Amino acid sequence: MLLKYKYKLKPHKSQAVIIANWLELARKQYNYRLAERFSWFEATRTPVNACPLNVSVVPVERIYQNIPEFRTQTRDGRKKDGNGNPITKKGDKHSNIINGYVAWETVQLADLGKTKKLFPEYKSIHSQVLQDIIHRVQTTMDNFIKPDKNGKTSGRPKFKGKHYYNSFSYPQLSNANILKNANGRYCVNLPKIGLVPLVYNRSIPEGFKVKTGTVIRAADGYYISFTIENRTVPLRHAEIQPTLENSKGIDLGLLYYAVTSDGEFIETPKFFRKSENRLSKLQVRLAKKSKYSQAWKILKDKIAGLHQLIARQRLDWQFKLAYHLFSDTSVIFLEDLQIASLVRRCQAKLGENGQFLPNGQSAKSGLNKSLQDAAFGQFIQVLEYVAWKLGKKIIKVDPKGTSQHCWECLNKVPKSWSERFAPRHERHSCPKCGQELDRDYNSALLIQKIGLLSTQGEDITSVKTAVKASLTEESRAFP
Image (cartoon, rainbow, N blue to C red; front, side):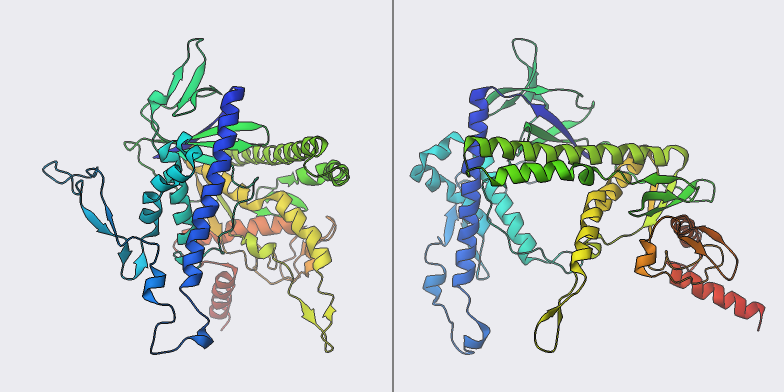
């Protein structure tokens, strides 16, 4: 089992200077290595309409001109065979070009020695911290080039600005790196930085070993995140059979943050909206200051601190809500929301003369801000974590139709987009069975009903399949 524990660091002034310097050097190295990859990537390609079919567009010598064909291993490998002998030994030669592709990660790792000779300031950084920068570049490029299990890739990697590279990692730390100094204060021993005091507010669980440590720069100082592991603890998922008594459905929305199938209505906290006026005033003051002046930097820190406060308020409230929702139930059903689709911009509309027509984006922008303030994606992750921690269960339901059908008879009761975001007195009224209740409460009951049917051996996975099944039963009853 892998866990992450985060602690606040209290570095001395000299240590804070070293950490800030390392972050800046790491950012420059990351950008250089990324540019190196892009330069080779673009230099070896040409537009499709200019590509001949019988010859290479770029000479082979130019493609591999600055890349050594082989690398020589400088020490025995760590991996060993059954007899205890290293699989790879000192002096072994390995090719840097495999099937025409450059093994960039190993090439750039081998080039770090040359970097230290050209730029002596990099000698002050721990070797494993430098190597981790290359691993980050490799991961970024893999996400860009190689599709995931759904066949999707991430966007083109971006170069990191000064305020967008905020961490560096020690890939190999241990429990021995957490110790007390001469004054009895808990510290973490970071190689080439020293004993850095930290707020050791919770101890590492017994049996867990510290594997890695990541130093993180935040608006209010520095933190360290430890990855800890205990292989004897299995990662288990709760096996609970949902019933009407031990489950509840939850409908997430903006009028009410959450409405449960047992009739609880939870108000939306609107942390960002409440701080929006204060943020706008700070931004106005910032715009009047000279860029990079002392007053400008002070205001930037205030704005960053306020954003951090909003994020922490939201996360704390979501954790408290998650524990509250699980206090009287074992299974929670909720919609499998596609957050990226909800906050997507409206498609542009063009008139006959080529002019852009109104597409409703101005109104959608306010809705997007409220959706991002609610942070439903983060809340679902919090719910999943709390469920795992308590030994309980989260089951996601297809969201299509959950606001358009009656929970009792599954009759379709159409509601327009404006009605779904109308004032709270608007209610769900079913002409077929006579159900009269709040529309969000109706959705929560319907989510629970569909969730229970989908887990009880029925061939029902959504509202659509449930409606088909009910129509089939009615046709059999009244042939």
